[in-house]
Image (cartoon, rainbow, N blue to C red; front, top):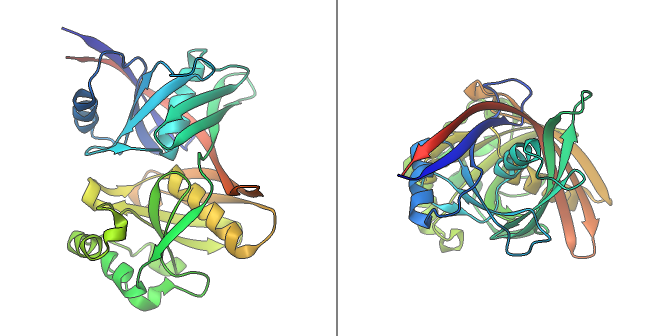
Length: 295
């Protein structure tokens, strides 16, 4: 029998049982892809990570990220949480970790509290902002149980965008945000009608008040009815807003998970660079469980 150690953390929160849950298998050598997928399904969190030796010894690790049903090229809270766990094991180099992932190299900076303990991390998304197809406001409204009038299109129409993994981003009114409820049949209909979505449809809806953002994320097709904190989508929103607002850089705070009883706080930045708009996302983490999987 083989044993694999794992740790769980709550990400983007300073309070245990808030934020987004993550399981981290700290040494996944010997696990097959199918075994990783099965373990992620068994953990039943929105994502689970598996840490492997890097291909390039200059980097910290190769990190594979799985949802309950498929592997992800990049994701926000898994990187922040994995960095938190590995830094607590002393695997950072001068407060920095570098993760090899499908979407590219992810650099993570460790945060310390006043007592000198690891308290969280900030990641740089591996790709500049890219945007794709726009979707009708009426279709997004149907997916969320809202009306077309609840979807704000004065700044941008619902759009597929990415800084490493794709989301459909839609602005809604502040009042509508709390009423949103995913409708699986409409999610499937939108996915099937838009081949540009490549069979995956994760929807990030947000309401903005200046530099403060409230958000919710629904991905029922992928097994996540609602996500309490979605770092990669939040970073994408920050990059998109900078592209719309103009300027060289911007900073935002984003709250998510309130309606789920798992409030999360994410700190976002976006800046213009030679290759486009780049974004970061960071926050605090809290350790929860340690255990072993038996295979």
